[in-house]
Amino acid sequence: MSESSSRKAFLLRLDPAVAAAIESLAAQELRSVNGQIEWLLRESLAKRGREVRTVPRTNARRPKE
Image (cartoon, rainbow, N blue to C red):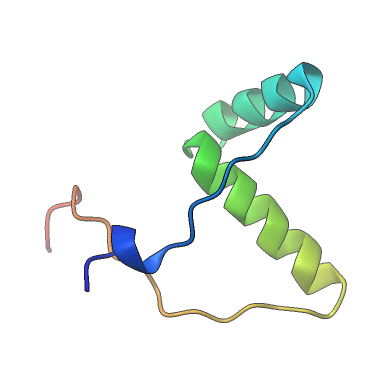
């Protein structure tokens, strides 16, 4: 099963100011907006005692060492 088919896709509506803040933070931390949103959600869940453990994803664009 490919990585993209094993991930849940859904529509997310955000206030424009929230979207701009996430875009700015993602750029500062060298993440995609999608990656930043997922990172923020995981961080928030962990702070509330709901840490989500998943299989690490591979980045097909990175050369293998």
